[in-house]
Length: 224
Image (tube, rainbow, N blue to C red):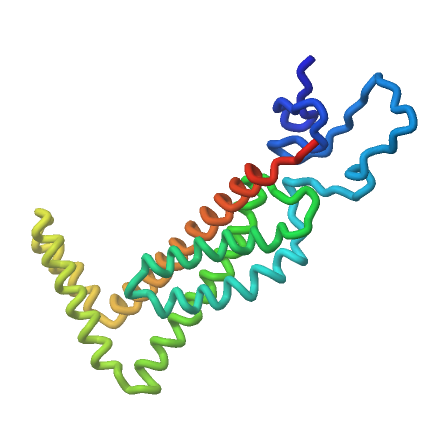
């Protein structure tokens, strides 16, 4: 007779104490006489739902890992792929550390993604803060505002030339370029780049954490 989970209705192997999909504890009844054999020790422990997260210990791992990773990602903005990979690894590491000594020692894909979402939000905000502080320091502390403006101007000019090469109306590109070269346009350009980087970091953190949760679910499948 096939046994299914009461929550997700997925197949549960006879003798499994937890659903392999959602982690719901399973009660297994048998008609055989137990005799003098003791009950399994694994039922003596309080078990948790593999689809839920205890946020207090989770944040103890997420905050000290995500904040430095976000700051480092801001410093690596010119090599954005490294910052993205760093945030993905951070999300996976948060899940792995959170799951140490927990019963069951794995979580569902959705729970892992939620942990990654919080990690990515913390890292993204740290990236935006570090990015803003770095720009302020460059312009006002180190008096490199002119060099920063020249760099932005070159990037905008190169981008507009590339857009024209794609066949876009040169007059429309000229109007857009005039706005981008204005103080408001420069600020909007920098802010949009920073927000895009923070969003990308969030996506990679969620992906890394979800992947870590999936690996844990496969490698630590509840044993009989």
